[in-house]
Amino acid sequence: MATTGKREAIRLYRDILRTIRHFNHPNEQGILWSSVLKESTRKEFEQNRFERDPTKVVQLVMVGRDCLMKIQEGMITGKVNKEPDTPTDKSPFQPLV
Image 1 (spheres, rainbow, N blue to C red):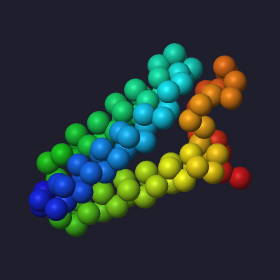
Image 2 (cartoon, rainbow, N blue to C red; image 1 turned 180 degrees about the vertical axis):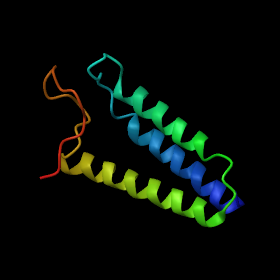
Image 3 (cartoon, helix red, strand yellow; image 1 turned 180 degrees about the horizontal axis):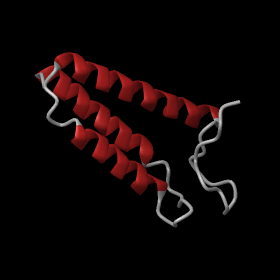
């Protein structure tokens, strides 16, 4: 991975972790969404850790950044719930209308 790509990937990872800290309510199994999302993020980054193709690295970072921006936008507009409205909320994500 090129130094710039590695730096961007680390920056994206940190931005994702900062964002998922806001999901502090449990899922249907009682596990905090922030923990579930953190584990999923770590797994995704570990799967692509040794990617050396600069084009692929840029593509992965751009897709990750785009997904993060959509989540952040959803948090601002109310399409993604950071807090549960009711105790029976199963997912912080609402379907787009």
